[in-house]
Image (tube, rainbow, N blue to C red; front, side, top):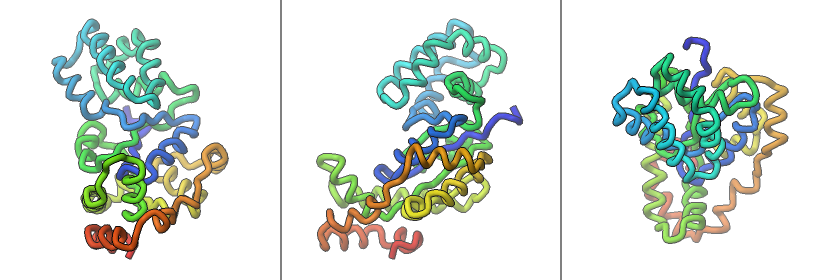
Amino acid sequence: MSNDPAPLFIVGAARSGTSYLHRLMNRHPGIRMTYESRLPTEGFRIYKDHNPPLSDESIHRFLDTIAAMEKEEDQNLWLCRTIDGKRHTLSDRYQMHGSFPQLIRDICELSCPSPLKGFGNKMLRAELCPDILALWPNARFILLIRDPRAVVASQIRRFKGRRLAYAAFYCDTHARIARQLARDRQRFLTVRYEEFVRNPKDQLKRILSFAGLHDPFIEKYMLQQAPPHSASVDKWRHHLSQAQIRQIEEICFHSMKNSGYV
């Protein structure tokens, strides 16, 4: 449908600020965004296993399967409630369009108390963006980047047993993929976490303008509901030793240089 909102995806390494940006975007009354949902990836594979187009009986089984899958994440329980409470409407709509991408949009629309202006997902794996584009060619992506020293410091504190070298290589790999994706400026917008928390008004305007959702009144409301915390930007300086900082900088040197962190 040409008038449908373009899906919007937040993409970034774990502990790069994606959870905050996800929370902020969901403060928009017309946006429904899932949290690391498996629907665009595993959900689509399950859908194909059901041999689409699905019969009425098959669509109900499929809805049961994806609802059970998404219940593993508390922040997606609204999605599960919509599937359970609106399944007959979802089934009727599916029989009309027979489209998996449209079905996901329908779930988000039926869960939204206001007219749906945007929907999407917060995700950690930049390498999956081409798969997302195969489903939604008009999708838009916010590539959130953050100083790898801050990301690694946060990861090794948050994830018990996470080795510093592993976290640094993960950050570097993600940054390299994101840099390649960012060449497509029509679909991908790069946002630095540090710039966002220091100048949230302008950066949120930039994001929503990119998504076709710019509205000064709503942007002000969103930031009032979920203000950023600038104190988090430089915490890594107090949590990492000089040896740890050097190790991260050695592993991530080129990606840090390309992103302006060194």
